[in-house]
Length: 172
Image (cartoon, rainbow, N blue to C red):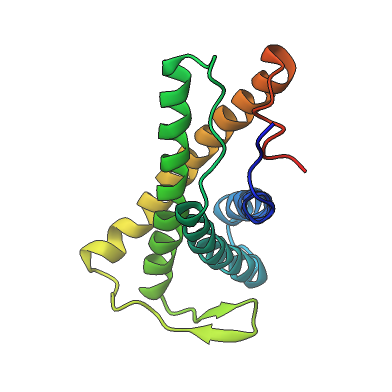
């Protein structure tokens, strides 16, 4: 069985953990009237971590060929797998940027786990990009949740129902 490289697997699972943490933080933030500033800071910091890890992941992906999909896999499943993965890559970049745009238009400074500050993007409240950043971020977050459900469901289907090695290629 051909597997993803160790680095690809580590990056995959680190990003997955950060996404799950950030979804929880984002839900807490969005459904609490006055979320603690610490929750907002953690959400932003995990978002920036996802962005940095995703840059590393896509760089690794372009320089290290992933294992081939099983020859017996139907064409529609291959297409769905490719579309889902590239949609994830797009979301992993666009979501943190929309969050960064949203934060940049507000008064709260952007810090990375309170270790150091980050520059704000050149937008102000009332700018088109600043105004659409928050609803776009939320829409993309729900899109990410749907993709995660499909991705995990497909992986579990391959492991428990089809019983091929697709899941094992990314698992440790």
